Length: 249
Image (cartoon, helix red, strand yellow):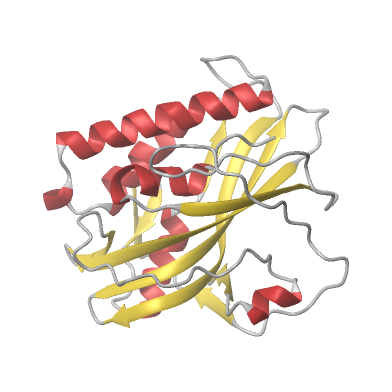
């Protein structure tokens, strides 16, 4: 069972975003029991499990998200000053790979220093990110039966990717969107992969000549109803208004 969702925990730590989660193993059979929701308080919230339908329904909307023009800390930056550019930044900033010696703390601090404006970084925010990431890392390790510290065993990893979005508000210098993330977890070489889908709402602003996470909330639009979880390929994905995402070559 995935005890914490990597992708949105970092955002929640310094943006105050809540989220919803649903889990399933690779086979599509629901996992027993509810996962923990990675809210700002990290309080477990009962949620329904989600199972991908056996039949494929082509997503009605696709975006080939633009890539950044350069990298910082190994992550793409320098996105176009467009709504699509903002989504490209969200795709880059939500991609996590916790494996080997790389920890959740490493990934979330990298996100913080790469995708927040320098003027918005404060010791308090950094500490909140560190604390939230450390708690998430401990939960993930415990759920996988991994050691409390040190490199993860071979074949043990957690990976998160943005797979869908729905625009809430798009202005020239700010974009707010509901985001759909897919987190895959494997607890060892011989273990089955498990999957969690997470929905949250994220705002970004055009700062320092690039798209940055809106940590102050000044550019955030009222999120309204959050779409239900539905993976790309599920007919409900289209009904909920999601746009599937892939990165342009």
